[in-house]
Length: 79
Ligand SMILES: [Ca+2]
Ligand SMILES: [Ca+2]
Image 1: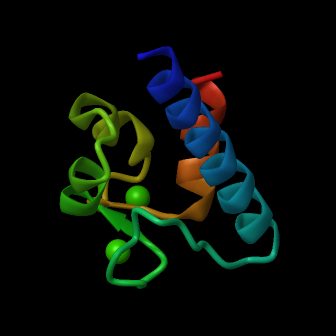
Image 2: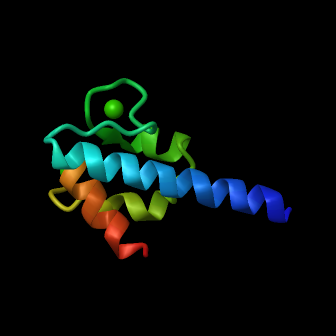
């Protein structure tokens, strides 16, 4: 169990680093964005096992999609 937790934590850290770096370049590439439209939809969010209740908090402009800046801002609230 401890090993699984460690692997999960490493995966999250890698995802965060990647998303932050891509957002800085004006592009948003995240493994949760399975249709590669640079936005995370609610379905993609849930499919990636992110907490469904957090989607509305992350979607600050309430357009139903999480873009790069929204994701990075939400991520920073999770630290
Ligand atoms: Ca998408
Ligand atoms: Ca949005």
